[in-house]
Image 1 (tube, rainbow, N blue to C red):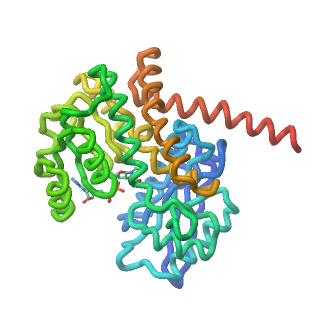
Image 2 (cartoon, helix red, strand yellow):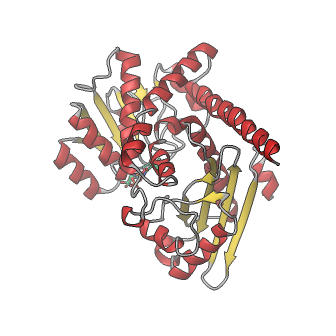
Image 3 (cartoon, helix red, strand yellow):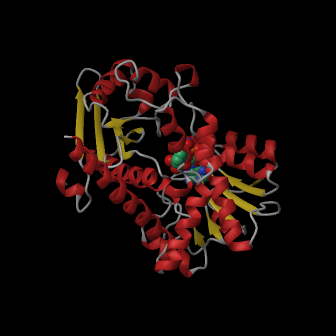
Length: 358
Ligand SMILES: NC(=O)c1ccc[n+]([C@@H]2O[C@H](COP(=O)([O-])OP(=O)(O)OC[C@H]3O[C@@H](n4cnc5c(N)ncnc54)[C@H](O)[C@@H]3O)[C@@H](O)[C@H]2O)c1
């Protein structure tokens, strides 16, 4: 597939291909929008089967970041980078520094952070070649691991959903089925347990599963069984596509609220959830805690300020539900509209201002 064909009807501003033959670096940086500010999004280091698959992932994820930041009220655009290869075998200091130089060549239009296959240590290495890196450890003036902030935001979103469905944001006695107890999922389980909720968990990683279950008393089920668990809320916190043709008919919950990106395998899944009477909290509204936390780093990190901003997520979600009701559209469509409206309104204001100054 050709590059412009892959972009299709989307409006990405720029796609940059970076190569360093010495280290084997092959990277694609997709900038979807800088209308609200520099395009911020993580670096995904993954052994893509084809270069086309890597390009598609970068484009899709960059667009998602535009919407996520816009809807969260952050003045950042959306971008994403992928590095093609198995991080366990390909990663080297030379490769990461060469990658840092590619980022630097964009002069701040793209700012990176951690994503799948990348670590905080990698961010430190990249930062030796460019200042356009976030998610650095606090010893480097950064905000550290964003996962606790993401989990905090998910809890806020669950409270909004509980208020909507049961007229109370008290989580005591609710049952939440959590798919994936990694960095976000485990922090979510801890917070839910403290709030008096019961949790049912699954993971492909037995060690993570046993730790969470012994620390928080979660009920453990198999990775395929999680979709059949009778619960109040299903929280996908593993990989994308949890809600698909097969699983959507199996769910036995009242709402889907989790941290995973791209939970709906296709947009039509939003309609299928409505048809089943299941309330869907759009993923990019719910999981914005990480980016909100990271965005704060750009101003000199203050965790109280960041936490206060993360605590707005519940309210952002409520507004999305209200808009969906008003417009008789799915919550997913309403969330995209909220994001696009802000990109248009504030983005055009910035252009106007630049025009005035020049
Ligand atoms: N970390 C953040 O701040 C953040 C922010 C926004 C979105 N997200 C998204 O949230 C999700 C979780 O992120 P994370 O940082 O906790 O990642 P993670 O890698 O720490 O955790 C993911 C967990 O899911 C498990 N898993 C993988 N496949 C599974 C399956 N089929 N069934 C059950 N469990 C499975 C993994 O073993 C792992 O324990 C991802 O989709 C990520 O993109 C994370």
